[in-house]
Length: 238
Image (cartoon, rainbow, N blue to C red):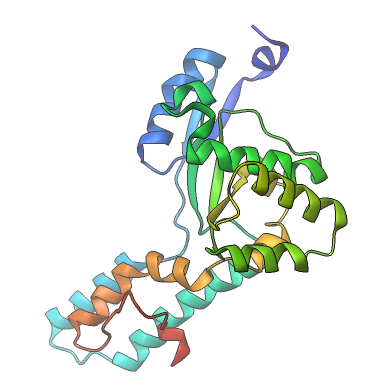
């Protein structure tokens, strides 16, 4: 057993209830012989609270203020937007990067390639190269074309970073565009999302996906029709 494993007595796991975090609990126990505390947090979306509020109003036969509800939903949207603008990963989806041999495509697996992208670019300049397995936050980015990607790299005021990005993307045939960039959670524990990534984050898309349950509640009240093809948010109006 390594010195690191010997020193681990307790692990606090941010538990989502999904396959990855469910599988990692017994793995941690078996490999580190440590106590695992699964931590579950309400990240502040509050759809269940709003649903209960609406149901209670209906049960009592009271009028429901659409304006009040829309303002409440808009405030949740603003909280998510502000969090991501601060470089926080709280509202971003967490997934796991495994060793290359776990994937059928080995190092050509899309997740593993994005791991290599981090290690050879942002990880290299910040001395935060990662060794799988580890968890990361998925940042959807507006870099889905060759033109957008090249403009982004050209705007980076860091000669080393822009060279590393261009070299890696060229060598790995990834200059056609990026849909996401993966930022290690270990990095985010001490740092915000790198500004060069954050400024290209598709924040409105993240908000829409997180707020789907809210939008369904509003649709049920006959007010808000959520159109996936549009980028409209409730906070654009309220």
